Image (cartoon, rainbow, N blue to C red; front, top):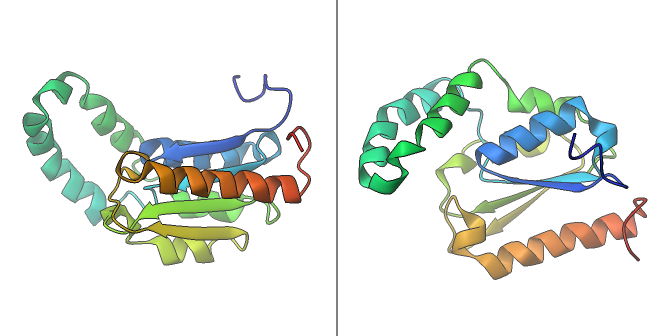
Length: 164
């Protein structure tokens, strides 16, 4: 509802599970978005990555003590994604719709980034040195430059609704 209520299709930006969610939305509503920036979500979340996460999750929750009460949201989301394919979402996007991957060099969820790039001909990749999974937190200036680059490309493509 929020996206559809905007005066022009937005550039959808998502980090981690938010990136997988943004991609799933764009695949089902490609006419509703101008493009997608995805960070920390370049691996299919199924099979061994999902099993590994399930084993590590309780440990992370204990270490993050304060996040313990809300950590279930991540686990619930991953459970809901069981059997879902983000690669299939990428393949479903129309080719002119631009997709930017912005990953930290040390992000373990980069494992499948080459396959993700190959799944959509309009996909581009920026890898940010010194950053891990949470690129906006680890390298905010570099992440902001990547976002500004995406907006500049959309302006160049003359996407309706963007200021000139």
